[in-house]
Length: 523
Image 1 (tube, rainbow, N blue to C red):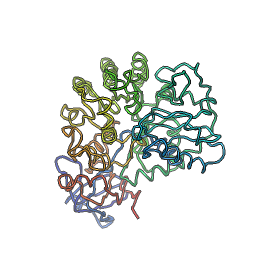
Image 2: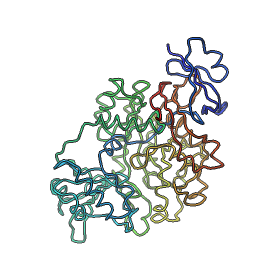
Image 3: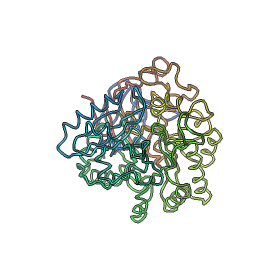
Image 4: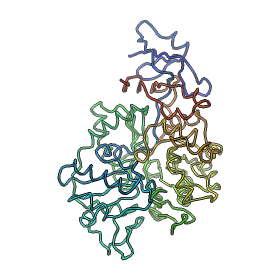
């Protein structure tokens, strides 16, 4: 049995009754006593560790992260900060010159909404820099692919190819594909043969990154390749993050056949919920809305017919799997709540979450509470999209990124990043939640500041509530009985909340401990 007494002047426990302490006694990875009780219970055989920094707090949980995407992005070009098509193309050209002959250009995370001329690009522009190789570059939100002519040719996509259900092949005035593939149309490229490098080494690098920014656990949204890599890491004793692993919609039948049930596993690696899609994303103009976007025709895209979404949701819930469904537009949120109402009508006690819940009719907020639906949200989406939301949604009466409204209505709110759509650093999310401002301090006073939350509420959403949203009540607080996951940071966030909240974003993690064991230390 290992026993360690951890000491620090400022330890935030996350317990509303006793939020602060100065000592934690940890045995075999769990907190067994705090404060004076911890000091008294520590015997001669107990190691003593004085934790560094200005503050110690529970390790943070990202309730929605795509680690396979994030890991593979490490080997790709980063286009997120490009401010024009020309700058984007130059970055692609330079990256392509570093690749072996024939290797596919992938990922990228381009964001045309930030370009000087915010128009989606076409294959002809990409052809000029991609050379004799397939290029299929994902947008920042992952809901659109920008493909070159060779990619369309290899996939057999022509003017005669019909739009798939839940997707769109964008076409020019003559009917020819432009190279922009939205939502399920992206899957048409899957027929192109290609070899991907092994995922595990990139996932290990990604794990190091996440631990370094204070994440001790995650809910991973990606597919079976990530599941297999995590299972291998766990079997080898190399998985230091706690991972709750989602199942994607196409793999639902496989999960049921294998007997997967949400909550199966151990303290480190567990079976999570099934992920469905109801619509697209705001940046791609594919979020499913009740009214058309300003300046654009149509109301977005329903990722699947409602009847199919309902059937898939009930199939998962009846099989013992929790359900998390992506919904960004107000119409998508309404429809997903309808499917969850059907789950509750059958008396199925599954955890149900709506992922993003970005733009919701005010009348639907009480339905989250009535149906016990978690709003799984990403604060950094608000600060990244606020200008776009004003531009294409405008003043219509919607609850947008409405964390305060959800909490005031008694709705469970869990926070994450949706990385690599946003940076996985949870302190960026905490800053956005408390200020509703970008890193540059704009807009002054925050965007729709009435929806700000307190730091304590934001930390709760990144710890206790995020864990509870996947059925875990054994981690998230630094109190007796809980797993000893903690981070030591360079500044006191609670002291900054009133005096200098902008500095929360720049928090540096000095140590990360999972089960009391040191898994990251800043050099």
